[in-house]
Length: 269
Image (cartoon, rainbow, N blue to C red; front, top):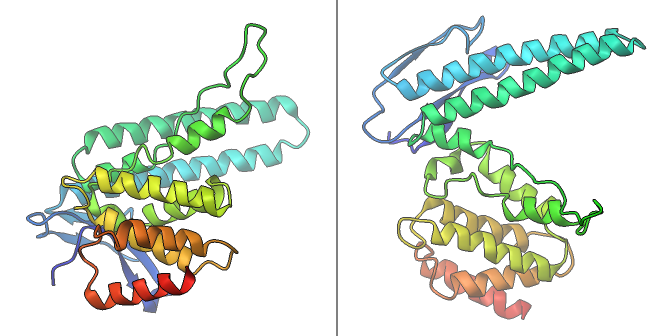
């Protein structure tokens, strides 16, 4: 069976639904094997024929080691009690651990550019937010600067041409978080930012609108606002339907769907 690009799970119901992950890359790189055991799926995994999955597994192993190191530091901080010097020493270790984690992730991303795994690593980048602008006396001149900067650059590290990101646990939560936490919760603001995000996915395809992420983003947001119980969000649904679907920018939608959508819009308006 032809399986699309993405992260997949091998789930074992007989093992309390335990699972391990693997990557399905592009066509031509699908003749590979994975061998492991139930003692530790990740650390005992042996992969043949898929360098991308080897890189993914190496990354998972390393992150498990870092997580174990983090756990020991957190335990030491807790055990330090009121000893400020001991706590500060552990906090210094934690800062060093976080720096090593970021450096490692950047290294892995650079080593895997042009692959689905590389795009996944890039998508996990945190936006680096500059300090507030200040006047000559050091007084902050725009208290909303960091919020606006983060919101503007929120999707900078998403590769809108990599369709495999749709089948990962990354893109949908990131999209939902943006509209749930980053956008002012008013219909007017939601309309502006919904159009902005959809336009990014539309424009950054190899041909306008010719990416799975555009199709997914558009359909996801249409459903998101149609199903919302928040008063006024039906206006966002109508705006997306009229500007993107009914205007002819959703060629995958069949006539039956378009007819129902048009009828739904007419009832609301």
